[in-house]
Image (tube, rainbow, N blue to C red; front, side, top):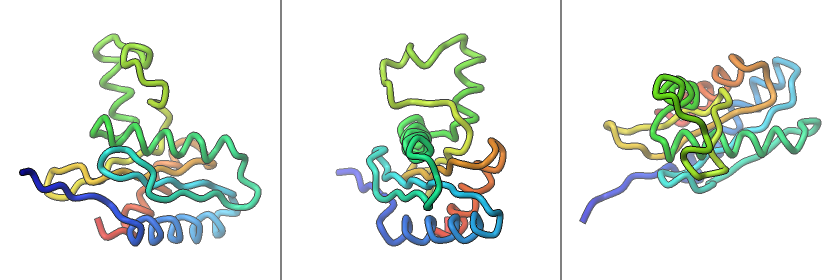
Length: 136
């Protein structure tokens, strides 16, 4: 039998709270999604004023990072280097939008976090704030 670690609700809630706190300081309405080691949603939320599509994108970013085992920016680069497109994977939930970060413990993927609603690079920074809040 293989033991599997996975993010849980406690980590997800800490991450969402930390990202929302920073977003309030930034004056932006964002959305955050946290998924487990299989890419399944643990928790997500969008701030008042954030468009619903922002949450959908955050969920897809987190899913992609978890199931592909790498941040969405790295996934995009790997696809470009290999001459592949998203349609090659046959999974309509995958995305290459910035802001999805894989979460690892001792090299094992335990889940992912993503933020949306900020400028592209800021989405990555916001997800990192959530990652730090999880203690990872």
